[in-house]
Image (cartoon, rainbow, N blue to C red; front, side, top):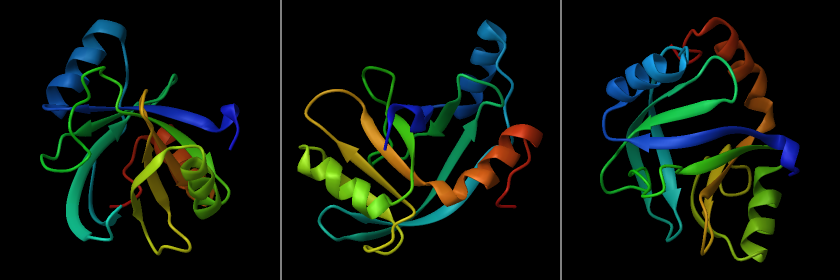
Amino acid sequence: MRPDDLFHTGIVVDDLDDTLARLTAAVGYRWCEKICLPSQITTADGQEIEMESTFCYSMGGPRLEIIQATPGTIWEPATSGIHHLGYWSDDVAADSARLVEHGMVRELHGGPEDAPMFAYHRGQVGPRIEILARWMSPMFEQYWTDGKNPFS
């Protein structure tokens, strides 16, 4: 991973629709369609959890990802406002291992252990780091262009 792999800032909120409306009114953001996805994640202690996540990306930059809070998970609003920084990764498993070597605990990942699609890491300070498989970037680029949910 490199600094220029950063592609979004994630913010977890209690009211997704209200936040989107306020950011549109205040600073003119335009939004893609909301995405509601069932997800199976594996926590740091190996527990597999099925949940639904709802989120939305801004159409323009700097790119924001606004996520509906899910109580009892890592997706709860951060006191700083910023929940995570999202980076593309050519090898999520290897980048995840490198983050662990540098003191960032892997909180969870999605997909198989040896080839996850994404992972979240947390250090002692600062926002979480999300790494997402770069092979997904064309789908997201299309989403950011036309605003249409690529998973529907």
